[in-house]
Length: 81
Image (cartoon, rainbow, N blue to C red; front, top):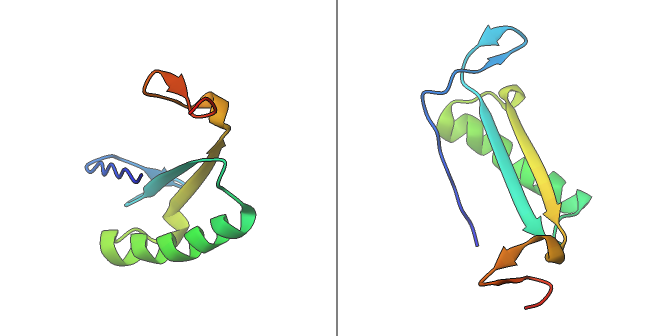
């Protein structure tokens, strides 16, 4: 599943300098690794700059790896599915 939420007209400042910024959160259920994170960074940061005009140094990606028992769907946890 992929969910993208884009918020515009949000004010941000990096090092005291206002300007365009990006914050991405990538969440997975037991599928995140250091190598994958490096691949995602290499893919997304240039995309932020090219498509959104956000300098790479003004973009952060947070990776969150959830255990199956910490994710609920359809009245049960993913560990129970």
